Length: 161
Image (tube, rainbow, N blue to C red; front, top):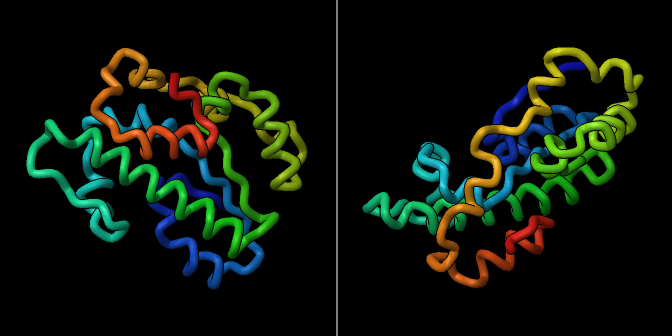
């Protein structure tokens, strides 16, 4: 058994599923509005056009493009995960992992068919500690985002109010 943390691995899910037909895939999804306000535009610049999201010419418009990319990527990952992997696909919201880690870790143990005790220790504690950027969207103006993007964030299971 092995795993890796690569935020863009969902882009290669068809190839991964074909190469590793028994693989289990855990997709950890950060809050889209937190991601919209990230200063890190690498994913948007590198992968946005592949998902139909134009890279803005100014940083002023980056949050809307970041959110559009996040929605496109999250919806695509969910769809492909369910279609290609079925029960071998697990999606968890990062906020749930960091706010109430125990039930999420229990779910992971069941999903991975490993004893719950294997999901303990300093490494697990480190990944279940919330990022300093968690919730940053609550201190920002949401008026810039088109309603359909906010609705998509909510549809994907996140609080938007």
